Length: 235
Ligand SMILES: [Zn+2]
Image (tube, rainbow, N blue to C red; front, side):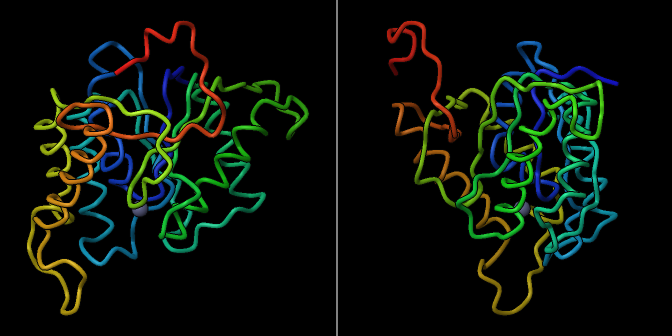
């Protein structure tokens, strides 16, 4: 059993890194114990295969300084919000006892990303109920937030990741099959994998511009944020 500060649920290996590797690097450096639970193995991904993606996730975890990484193998492209999956995720929350949970938002073009949101939202609630599966390890998470992969039209706060942008790119490049190695099928949306890195760079600049810095990662807060002094949060 581990006790984490932050537990991040990722529909596919590399989603957590795309959305928030910079924030993970910053917070881990400050001593936070951070874990990632991948919900699927990404077996339907156009590029790479299950074995290479598992090795890549291991390498990325090392670069991020994660306290924990595991994969629930719930089925790429088949992720659904049902009782069995809710229970598995609630169990991970009870086992790892994080203070804060992150997952993809419910506004995303990939159905697995939206399903992950629904699952984690339900598990976040159920994990705290002692009578849910009669488990005395019930655990209340303080807050849950969403990180962005494709759509970022609802931004509640932005983390300045300018100082760790180069490191984030190295973490992404650990996913060689996704970001470095070249071949993509005819008609694939991007001309080459480096295009995807350029797109992520543009997103980071867009989000950074919202708070007046070079690079940012944005997050959505489903519930209001607690503020003690408004002077602490001015950009
Ligand atoms: Zn994904």
